[in-house]
Length: 458
Image (cartoon, rainbow, N blue to C red; front, side):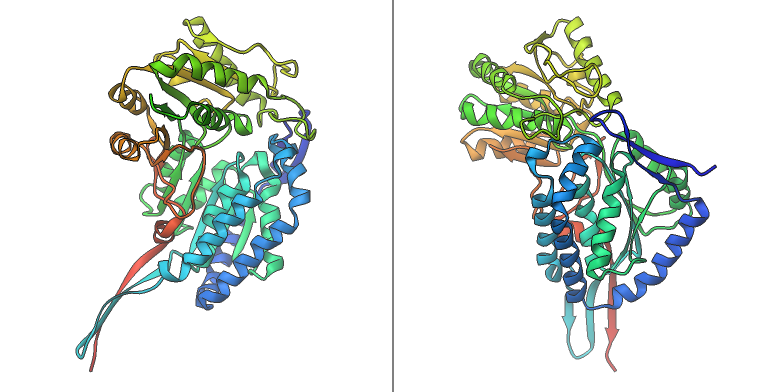
């Protein structure tokens, strides 16, 4: 019996999409075709590869009217937000614009006796394992620069967003990228691990859970396969005593609640200078009370369901445990909360780091808020985490923010903003958030290897 993958829609619990998985033999054949096709792809001029990737991006844009409701059905984001094409395009086109410089030879010397230089060469076949929460933007982070750098790409998308990989492959193939150079594949966990263990790939980029990252590292053990891992997060915000209170509340609460809290760099805990604490909490609660939880296909909805009932159940459990341990919940249950995927947002105070909601990744519409006495206490609390993706600092004092940023164990430091990925900067993390770096010049360095030339002239 053929094994299948099913996308269960959070809108109504129906099976929205179903696809058969490839057998190990079928998957290995895709790898072999990609390996052969990559040689010719890498031999094409860089300008041609850039042009074809840009055309693939434009083809996705042309599908956006179909993609937006499709995403709502698959993972629950309200249609009012218009999908992901803005960020998708921004990231891809930025990587295209810097490709020539990022991939240029590093000239060491060229004299009468020797020419010496370092060239960046592609890994070969790159596997991209993408998540469901921002399925287009997270995938393009690696797909675009990997193809531009001369790699072939195999894309394995999350089961919750089964149709995304098909869309991307269709668009890029229509634009002229060869089918064997960019392949969308449906794989189960065992087949994925077997391919990695068989040294099928020159590089693997995975975005997902800590457990998934552990599985990737185990599969790659002893193969010397390069890995880029973006895993869990528990990103903090710190509102200092001189912060713009309205701006901080608006941005941090949006960062905590947008996409039903299902953002890689969403705000999951907030520390506020004691002098501003009560006013901040009041503003935060007022903002969230204005949300409309409901069917994401309704343009009046501002907060859709979580992508799966089990994700919502974990958030409910974290909130219930915190309240039982003494936390204060500031929001009543919303009318549309069905006890399933449709989950009421929540703001908690009187929380401590002994509670899971302040320690474990929630990945849902809940945030705990704590008062702090000074920068030292805030730094200690922000660093009291297994994760390190981003931190959001609120102050008009850029030197103060930089000093605090230097002391925080994180991948990105924001000042007076949050929950944004700048493609000109390296997207990276530390601790259990993972390792490696995407986008920026460093993204190209990770998707290629250095090759040195030491040429003695006759």
